[in-house]
Amino acid sequence: MIDFHDKLSQHSLELSPTGLATLQVNVGKLCNQACLHCHVDASPKRTEAMDMPTAQRVMEVLAAHPQITTLDITGGAPELNPHFDWMVVEAKKLGKHVMVRHNLTVQFDGNPVTGESKEYLPDFFAEHRCEVVSSLPYYSQYFTDKQRGRGVFNKSMEAMKRLNDVGYGKEGTSLMLNLVYNPVGAFLPASQASLEADYKRELAAKFGLHFNSLFTITNMPIHRFKSDLVRHGGYEAYMEKLLNAFNPAAAEGVMCRSQINVNYDGRLSDCDFNQMLELPVGSTAPQTIFDWDFDALLRRRIIFADHCFGCTAGAGSSCGGATA
Amino acid sequence: MPTYYESNDLARFADVGTHQRPLMDKFFEYYAMATGTDGALTKREKQLIGLAVAHTIQCPYCIDAYTTGCLESGADPEQMTEALHVVAAVRGGASLVHGVQMLNGLEKVGA
Image 1: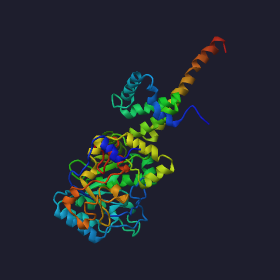
Image 2: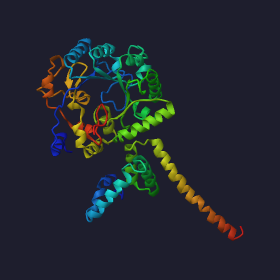
Image 3: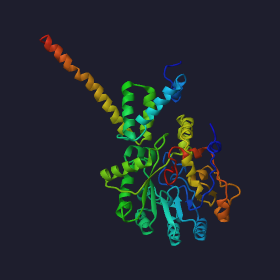
Image 4: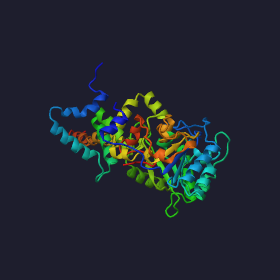
């Protein structure tokens, strides 16, 4: 199979950083769920978590750089990090837009280790005007529970209702609730606009629920999803599918060009997928948030590998959905 | 043991144009327009129709292609299964409606 760099060369594409508007921070791998396609391999058994000195350093970097307008907090279930609430409050004090990758069910499941309740989250998110981004693999139970675990769909509907009740996803409130679709298997997402219309129609009609936008994301051929593909003999076919669907326009819009990703221990990567593959930012750039250098990061060479075909297939894929 | 149907052959569909490329190119262009775009019918509706036809003609290549096509146009197994029941109903109905001919035959012989 042709490698990613060769594919870029074929299309005369040089994907260098275009800016650094988003700092994506993965605060840990603990999660109340253990989803089939999780690229983090997150679960209730994971213990990795960002500590307070690292969280404080994240805030120092945000404070020093008005160019970074968005803090994107992910995990695991990021709300399970003991410093999560503090980070949200501090980032908002700095005037940053805060996105939280919220899995919905943590509202009811709480912390699987300490038993701490997380039912306060909708009010907390609303008070601090966080953008909430939540995975929902489909607008019905079968696909959702198949990927995310039995009972997740019904819990997700209840959690969405609680978010709607405090104003999320409703016109006029500016409290953004965005949903994320990713395929339940080795296939590419349908058109984002078409799926968004379906989700809106079906969730409103069947559950009276509302949200703002749907982001479609392609399954990355790494970690749990890759293991599943290999186990079923479908890895080569899936990679071939991604390669055949390579879209230069989607490649131009890949998220690594405008963000930096921070590991729970402060190490820097170009994206969360690279982080999980232990691929740090290029060697000319600072390797951790403790030796942060904004200009050097803007000059860095982005690290690509074959999993990047997942972001460039079809309409493209990013943490913000399609890119083309 | 070799068989007439190999799943890898689906990816070789275009090879059928080896000895008459212009006709095959025109076919693929037409095929993509007919099945792969939103029109008066959505792409998903077309893919579900394709899945139904694939089962009616019992073409393994087509069943493979349209199963993926349905998923990649946003359909779920529930919708896909309903499409198969339309096939079953129409095919079953087609058999049963010919029962009228049987009734005509019975009448003709006074039975």
